[in-house]
Image (cartoon, rainbow, N blue to C red; front, side, top):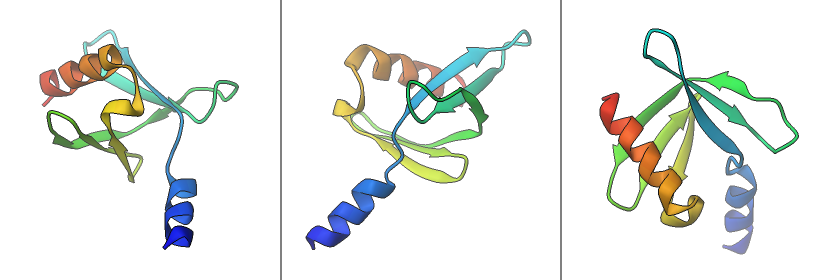
Length: 86
């Protein structure tokens, strides 16, 4: 059981996500794997937006954001962006 947990924990994407507002009002989502890595454009789809959990699909990879994934202000801003764009 511990091996399965460690395997899945290592495969879990870690990094930073940001949105950039374009001139036409649309959003461009960008991801970087570490602070030193360059930002790269990604496709993002939110398929679950709950009060505690956010389910994202980033370039086809599943990403779950839990309350401790980031500070509460950043998660609140992300929820606002996702609700506005649906």
